[in-house]
Image (cartoon, rainbow, N blue to C red; front, side, top):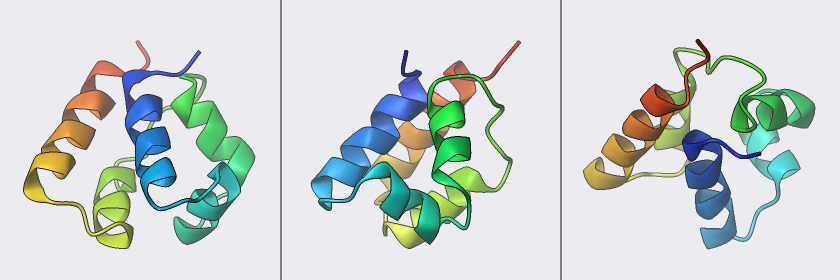
Length: 76
C-alpha cells in the first residue's frame, strides 16, 4: 500500500508521463528500492527529497508537500 510519500511521487511521475523505472533512474537507484520506499518497506534516504526537488524542478509548495509526506511516511 502506498504511503503518503509514495502517492506524491506517483503524482509527480504521472504529471511528466514517467514510470517508476524512469524516476528511479533519474534518482540513481533501482526501481525495486524506490518501490519499497513508496510502499513503506524501506526508509526514505535523507537526500531523496532534495534530489526529487532538483530533478523535477518542484515549486516551493510542491517541495513542502513532499517533505510533509516523507515525514508522515517514516518507518517507526
